[in-house]
Every structure is written in C-alpha cells, then in structure tokens.
Length: 461
Ligand code: ARG
Image 1 (cartoon, rainbow, N blue to C red):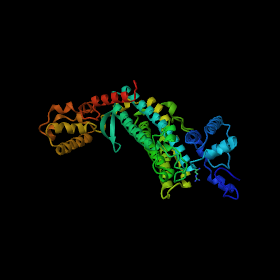
Image 2: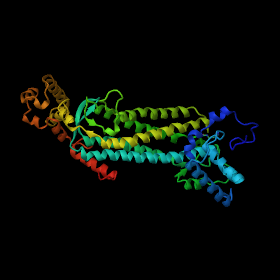
Image 3: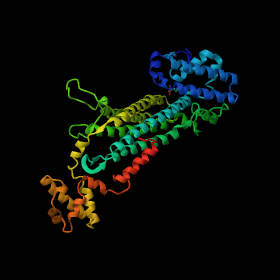
Image 4: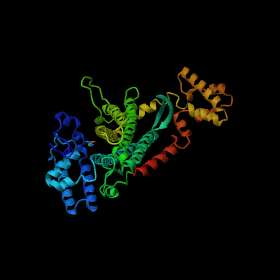
C-alpha cells in the first residue's frame, strides 16, 4: 500500500508489527498545532517563491486550518498505517486536495519538519513553565511580609547552625527559581532557531527561502548547517536539563517541608486541603503532595538520562532513534508543570508554627558564631575566638543551659578582657541584629531584598 512515506520503491506494504513498532503518532499527536503552523508557513514560502501557485497555497492553508479544527474537535481519526502526526495531517490534506496536497512536502523532509515542529512546541512549553515559575516565586514573596518577624534556625548538615529570618529563607527559593528561569531563557534562544528547509540532511535544490519561513514562525534565525540541524537534539536535552534542575529545586523544598511538618520539627502546618489521610490510622495528616513532588523528580531526572543515552553514539545525520526523544520531554514538561502548579498554592497556604519554632530557638547554640565574631571585633584572633567559644559552648552543653545563661565568671575565665558586654550579643534575637553583610540575614538586607523581589515580580503582596 502506498502512503506518503512509502514510495514506489516498495513492492509491498509493511508488516503489521512494523507499523505498530515504528509509529509515533500515539505521542507526537501533541505536535498537531505546530505541524499545521509549520506547514502553513512552508506553503506560504513555497508560493512566495513560485514553487506552488498562490491559489494552491490558499487551498492548502484553508484545508490545514480545517484539519486542525477537526483534530481539536476530536473528529480526526488516528490511523495505525500512518506513522506520525505529520503523515496524518499530510494524508488528510491529500485526501481533500489530491495533487495540490501532494505539493506541500516540496523542499522539506520529515526530518526537518519534525525538528521544527518540536522546536515550536518546546518554545511554548518553556514559556508555560516560565509563567509557572513566576507564580511560585510570587507565592514565596507573598509570605515575606506575613513571616517578616519570624526567626528560623538555619541548618547546615541538617544540624542547627545560625538563625535566619523567614523571608530570607523564602527568598533563597526565589533565587533558585530565578536561575531556573534564566536557564530556560538562555536555552530558549537556541530552541528558537528554524531548521525548516534543511530537508533530509543536505538541504534542497528547490529555490526556497528559509529566512522567510523562519520569520513567519517567529524564529529568531535559521540554522546554518543542514547536516547538524536535521539531527540536532541539543535543544531537547538542554530543556530536559533545565527541567531537571527545577525538579531538583522543588525536591529540596518538598523534602524540607516534609521534615518541617513532622511532630519532631513542628515548624510548619501544610494546608489541609493539600494533605491526605491514612486508611488505617485515623490521626494521620500526610504530606503526600510534597512527597510526590520529591518522588516525581526521579522521573524528570530519569528522562534526562534517557535522552543523553538516546543520542550517545548516533552517527550523523537523522536516525530513527530520535523519534524516542518526545515521550521523555513531554513527560518532563508535564511533570514539572504539574509540580509547579501545585507547589504555588501550597507555599501560599502553609502556616509557620511560630510558637513551636520560637520555643526551640535557644537550642543548638545558634548565637555561637556571631558571638565569636563579637570577640573578633574585640581584637581576639579568629582561631583563638573559635576555640574559646567552642569551650564555652561545651560548658553550656554540660550544664544544659544557653550561652546567655552562663555567668559572667565563665566568660571572664575564658578570656580576662570580657565584661557584661557579652550579654549584648547573646541570644538569637541579638545574633540576628548583629548581621551586616550584603546578602546576609540582616533585617535591613532582607527588607531590601523583599522590596527588590516585589518590584521584580510586579507584586504588591
Ligand atoms: N516519526 C518520525 C520522527 O518522529 C519521523 C521522521 C521520519 N524520518 C525518517 N527518515 N523516517 O522522528
């Protein structure tokens, strides 16, 4: 049987198993709108350059729009004998326009067509993810005023380290997601290049105008080497990487909030509507959404891995292996989009358990480092001060008290120069007041950062 992809060279149709095994329409049907857009632009260029007649182009365009509407209305049948969405749309056009439809594929191949359609799809996907990242950033910023006065214990190695202001914590996530946005933006520049007209691998002998098609599709330029661009999937891989890093950042948040919502930490109460129960333990309020955000990261990172392995060792130029790039990237985009979408309201709706956090702040010697820095300001060498504060912390630990609860005699025994002034810098509140450096948790610095983010995200919250 003759289909657009099987020329007269074949004496027989394909084995049924081959059809099923090689099809991609079951997943690349998602490219239908991009395929129609690409074909319309291509047909316009063909007409502008005298390769098809203007009237033929109009018929093609009209029919393509009709086909797109049918797909959107669910009135378009996907057939097992047509490999992908590109063949489906072309065959539907031929069914309607006969020879005029048979002209559309002049000067292009499915190799460049697939690459172009996928670039268009990825471009949109990047924009969609970017908008969701902004929503999540806004959710964090919306917490900043609400939690302005809250001091949290900051951790390193998951051991109590130094006190930090809650907004400083929230903005740490804004920064991470901002770099994710930058990565996507940068990646988008390389995605947004037209490969249409590079044809199978060598270009075409027809007088096409690649710049013209690129302009019509909103691409910023055309790829320079047909061998490279008909086979290049860098744009897929780097998008998959950018998505992996977003997932990893989300996973950090998820892990942290799963911990924070335990009885052991008791730092945060997740909104009940975002929690789940247990079928056996009636008391349970589980953070399943956060766990799944963490869990789904595995899929996204796995997809990146699969894509890297997919392209490893492929000779130039197009190889059918490349068809396998779509399920992975579709899944990564869908998964990250879903995680971002649910993370934003969850971040907005969670409540810090202020009393419980405050009650624990005198544990863990969070003021030890700023006290050491007080000693440095008193001209005690850092290494000496470090050792000396360590000894005082040991003493306080043994006596089960905080540094502020040690008597002055202990301080003077540690260093003769010390006086009542030590109590001006001990305790978590005073430690917070002591910070001054740019980017630190100093109240003034944090307030400036909150303002910066409000302006940047154009939010009045
Ligand atoms: N379904 C294929 C894909 O998505 C179309 C490419 C066909 N090209 C080819 N030379 N067989 O990659």
